[in-house]
Length: 351
Image 1 (cartoon, rainbow, N blue to C red):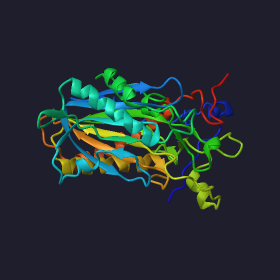
Image 2: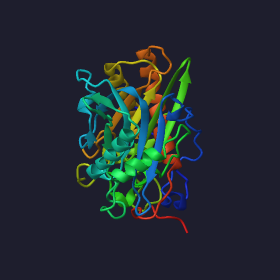
Image 3: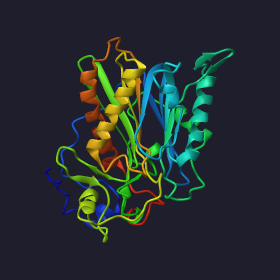
């Protein structure tokens, strides 16, 4: 296996800012946003009292959905409902949130917003909005008692738009960090990123909140874009290479990280096909985050198919496209991330 190159020669100030380091690397090939997929809108809520927030991906007309949970410490809601053998075919939104398990409360606000619009699954006298959700751990950044709640989820819906959403330190990516295997003091900022591509008559998009134990790498060059830094905090040193050299990390508490996201397409898909598409999204994580799916991550990917193109999805083609789009979204997340107040040592704002 070819050893990854490590980005070098970057000034300490850039590292301390917690931003992506391979500034000379060419940009990811995927451009656009998940909102390029017809039928998808995105809204952020960013908490001002500490670095945290939530992001809602709305599919108000309903979208066939699937999910794939790979991390060992997930925090999720309504993922069992998405099993292909279960009743409900479509969801109306997906929520990505900070705040660890507390952040699942924000999905209640999304449900309330959809209910007020008369959107939901017909169940007797009521319409029940279907809102799967996943959370990431950002409680180590700032006051852990402040986390997204139902009001935050409602506010994210109010802010939703078909325009390209903001990236970096916003919404569910506000308190995200990466490269935590050797402790938060040597970590860097993560964030939220999005990308899309149109192939023929089909559009594929992704959005992801990157809060990984591992390093974010450019899969084309192997360079570390953001991740664990050396003991002096001056440069990245490559987490996996350090472990292979015998530099074993200290024990980590489970659930201290997690990367969560959504892939979407306007192709017509079944629930089973959406589940496979979510799995392909994890392939994109594996290409751009190293290590991935650790015992301290709860990595979860949802897949949405709006069917707006009216065309059946070619699963071989979609399976090839989705990992590239997801990997591009991961890279964009850390490239757009900014240091924020309350960040861990080594990630403070520049004077």
